[in-house]
Image 1 (spheres, one colour):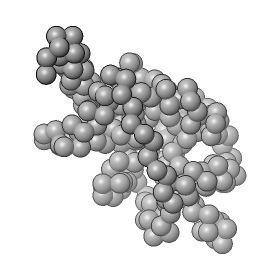
Image 2 (tube, rainbow, N blue to C red; image 1 turned 90 degrees about the vertical axis):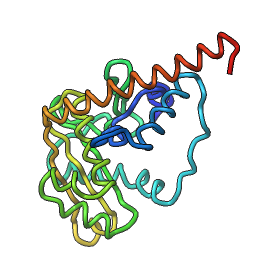
Image 3 (cartoon, rainbow, N blue to C red; image 1 turned 90 degrees about the horizontal axis):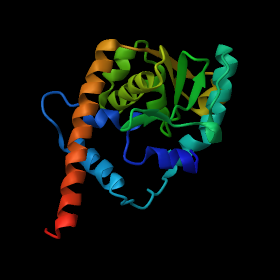
Length: 215
């Protein structure tokens, strides 16, 4: 992810965090935390970057290899990857950075779990509903793919699971096709507009207090 991509994300709700606002009955603490994070970004306040642990480093190191073998396995050409990846803006408050794009109808999201057991769980999924039901992490990945479809206006997203040792020894990787669901796009948009309005109110309150010199 380059500098311009990082800059473009400031203050926007991205696909990777969409699940935080997809509550069932009432906004959760996670929902409000994300809104506050986007509010302080819009106010020009930035927090230090997070320390990259072993799992994150593992994922970053293996993503290019996963995409290469995905191309070999499928015969598809993946573009806009790595340093060439780009942030796709959706209106003025959301967007996504796909791990790769295929033509003008598909996208790719790559996950390289550090834990082999997690990789196997992801690679065994057969239907997109299975990913959505696979706990908090699975739900997060599902909404990430579904919102990426919405933001990029594409028809299908490949959720790719990769572990270097499994591919080295068994030529095995996971691929789950996520198709666009119009009803869920409507749910995402409803939550996005609601969250964006809340974020704007927080920003307005801070700016008003700053202007009036009150606390």
